[in-house]
Length: 327
Image 1 (tube, rainbow, N blue to C red):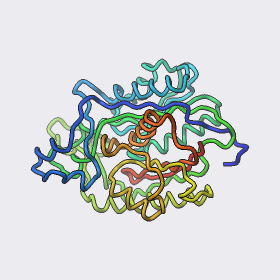
Image 2: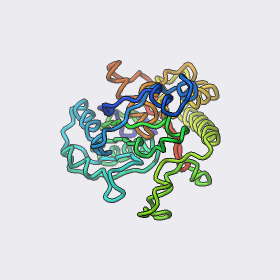
Image 3: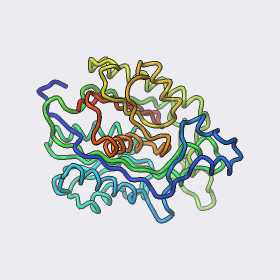
Image 4: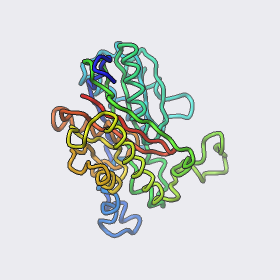
């Protein structure tokens, strides 16, 4: 990206957290785990679960509305809605058109199933549309994972949560927006994190409930892949963007596990860089963690830190990516 390219700015942020907060003590008691066990292994202290009458769209809509209000953007100005989610209201139809309708948007709307890396991909695609069309783009990432957790599976039960985050992208000054980007995948590890049943490979069956929950058969392997992929992509985009860790305004990684992020920081020189995140309070809501962290920080601090922002994620598929965003 050159300074002459049309700019893209993050003009508004939004988030939504369901009312019910589930602290570690509740899960540790149910699973007969020692006090402090979850926090020591994940950095998570609590997470939010949606109410029984809430669907994914009920999380996404208030987050999107908050971003529109904060940006002062009339709904009829938005040119595209991208909804990054792995837990739509239904397999068909997509959820994005419903969210767009209820937000009063008269634009294109599409779901983007990129797992934990969905927001990074949606952000880059959204920025491209802003540059091509000059229209604002609303990017929402939301997941309702509490209904995809096997209550007896400690590897997923302690991590996953429900939340939504949103960013409203608008035309900005030249040089604003993605400065360097790397999006990658490795389908050799396609089934490392999975929900087996419900697609065309293993459809729903009246007599088969097994396979409807999230599975992570080898958590250690996923941990290692995530560390390596995130460290690699962080180094690549910083090199492409000509930025050192000390020159970053902040680091906004997907909030999967604090131990993963600590190892990535150690390998890339990011240990002293301001890390945006709400993992301790809100757990892992997949693609929603990054925009949730951004919106939470803006609400607390009044804005994002000055300087380039490193945004990155690793997710099921395996899919990962990073972008260096110039504010």
